[in-house]
Length: 199
Image (cartoon, rainbow, N blue to C red; front, side, top):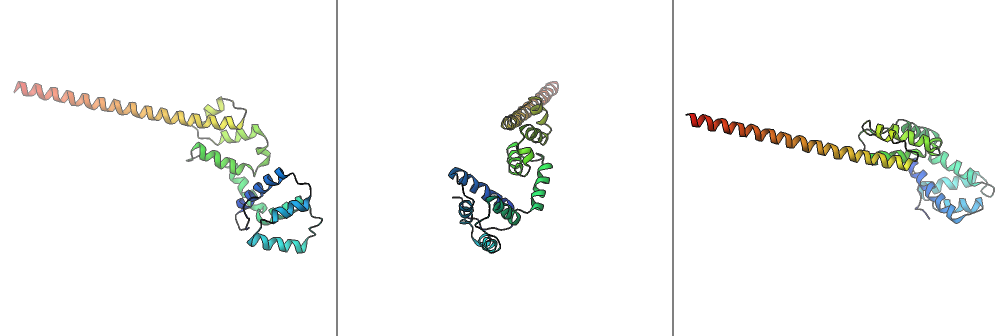
């Protein structure tokens, strides 16, 4: 079973807990609402346990559905204003100073708050690519990826290629500068030798 859930103010902790619990419940293939609810609430401690005791006094647990339980849980630990805030954060998400990997991780963590995009591969790719850095976006767009995972990989490859080409350009520029300095020094040396010869 997943780790214990203490409650608290961070809705992402609550959502992650429920996500892990549901994966576990799905592998068990449980049929009854009561058994599902019992298994989830068994992991409640602290604030979550106190909240659940309050719910058990105000609701009939024998007739409660799992969907009702989840609705109550999310109303308590993941209120609608916080959900809207995270959705808004996703809507405005851009790569900015993040690496492609950091951007992808942030994108993925916020994606679950916009199920309309999460469940639509084309819109998901479009949103991901739209948030990429301007040096990467055109190349990923031109590659016309039809799978989200491939679009992410393409973004990582393009970023790596851009980085490599910058290193090569910098190295080339450095060697040109060194060559120019060497040429100037050689020219000065020749001049000095000539002026010394004349003297």
